[in-house]
Image (cartoon, rainbow, N blue to C red; front, side, top):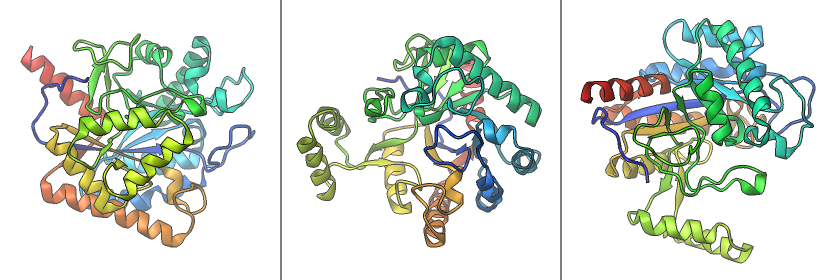
Length: 336
């Protein structure tokens, strides 16, 4: 699944940051803090050193906080980043449904509620940064055809909400086990299926297997991941034996060498884009489960730099998601 489209042959790296409030996993608070945003220059300095332009996916508490906007605008005004939309259903107005795990998935809300939330955040980001966002990532990866329809109505061109091989149904979310690991075009009514002339672009997060027999590992994962606990333990055993390892291109879930190993597999499989992701909360120790203390933060930043060195050595350009979408559109027009 997922026809590879004609783009520049050189691999591009898309660094994406879910830029959000401090309260990890909290769905019922009346007020959300954004202290972690003050730490963004820490990682942005690292990006600047390697000429990497990230995409900051901004949510409501960030877009409506003056100090947080100032931090991001200081980066944006230098043209060192791009701003996208990151809609958390639990803290984006209007709040017309009870806050639960089920409703924390944007894709579970009624269509009009989804539209109003994305539209409100879209306006807030436009007002804060002086430019309409055109790229989107749903909070908790809650994506479906209703979300896609709303993006179309609001003028978005690309999404990056999908996590290949992951099934979020036990968290009331979508099942992404069968989507492509390649970027693809899709129709708003069937977002999990690649369609050559689809109006929207999907840049799935770079998640894949470290081993060479990719198709076999897809079957293993799809078969065992939805079966009883005893079979899930089989996956754990296969991972320990380095027979079947699913990795995520993220400093929150992989160390530097693992990210490089995964990137090399994707390049060999002729992926045009590598999508690296993490959360802004990981920059403030204790605010995410991935960075608990100052030592964790040092390791976290070291893993990012390890990967950036790899991109520089190999000549991979680190561009924004917005630029990636533009390059595909331009290539399609020139090849028409």
